[in-house]
Image 1: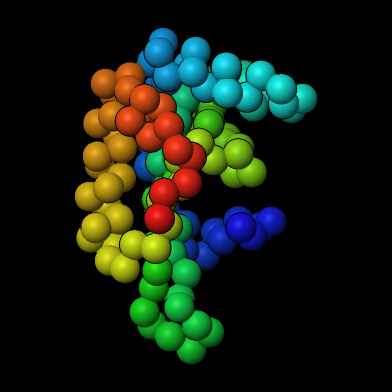
Image 2 (image 1 turned 180 degrees about the vertical axis):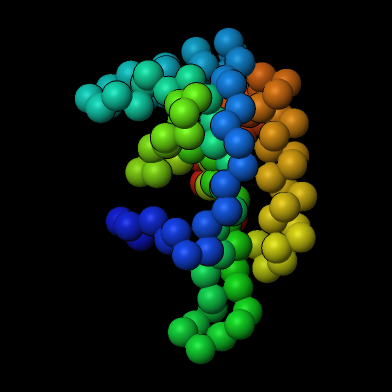
Length: 118
């Protein structure tokens, strides 16, 4: 994974408050980390696209869920869900909506326990 985020083709949605179940699972998963990630209270869903090569107009998309704060700041180095290799922006948008539903139902980390998919 890149050490620097791709903000050229990076589209984020509004922050959504973590439910109690997701929050406790999240804190449990990162308890050994020394940074302030565990203070996050929200999730941020983002779509990130990259061309398949330098001269291509064909993109591969990722849907990513980051721990975030109510003000929109987020931890790009610690995504909680990363779904890669989506070949259609429309499918990526559909998946982002599905993830939003899981977040609002307080079951994101139950349904996406494996951090990386795809």
